[in-house]
Image (cartoon, rainbow, N blue to C red; front, side, top):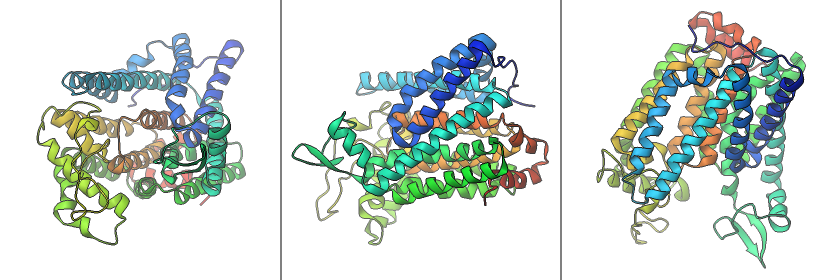
Length: 453
């Protein structure tokens, strides 16, 4: 049994060929933007959705409804509907409604793209994958240059072409009106976005013509991504990479066990986020001197204060995107010389943010959404299923210490990562393991996904 079947790809000639090429060019742009300009991803997602809509309209206009009626589609629709309901009692109602609307628009765009991708057969899927892989590798090269040489491209563009970000003491060092240095954390979103596209990118290399090419491109992709993560200041990305890799390795031994373990972890993280996030402060970990004070220790204070705020409206929450409206409670130097005891503009963990803004109702719906993802993955080819579990774990790790769920670039990156996995499921080579028994499918997944190792 599968969630949907692939059928009806357009003949590759005339307008259909141009449509495929246009989609490929947009996917190459997306692949590049993942590492180079992640804030451009929502716009590219919208453009890609328009092309996808034309393809779906010509081939199978009912395909989006098929995806929407799947458990994941239903869970996502219910969750988004609640975002609009939740925004009605938000303190900053216009901001809440706007954010709920942007999430809904990106979900519609993702649905159209997923419907189009699900209609692509092996050959066409391979074309799109090669375009995306080319853009992804070019983006990694761009990011490496920025990380190694101190953001020379970004500084040049910002000083001489167009302001890419607001030059402020928080984001950059400015001397006589010129940006001389960009703060290290500015590129953290680039690295985080790259981590989410790494596993799909690895699968895309399996579509290359020769074994030598597959190994060369896979090696370049993995080494380049690892270098970007290790050279950056994104501790979140390091953790996500480790967790995703560990789960991928576990999936090589047992897909069912991996699925059950992820489901259990997801339930605990979403439903017990408030007491769990209060625990580090209660245990006194904020006084541990060897922990990084400006990142890890800061979160202990912020999580404790945020958790306390959850209890004020535990059922309905304060409203989507309204963490920013909570007043700041400043600590004295005697308490802590570095931080304020507050969520600030961000709760610094997605799971606690859900409880604060959406309440217990939102946390329950968010939990169901994750379980729906895991349930649907079991119907994918075994090889792709194994990779998808690694991606799920990496995304969850990013959410664990990520500072805001509602960032448009983050949601767009997440949507594109899962669309890329759906595209990978169309590759004939990756589908061979789908007929394997569960106890050996994981071994096949590891062997096929990591040929360069």
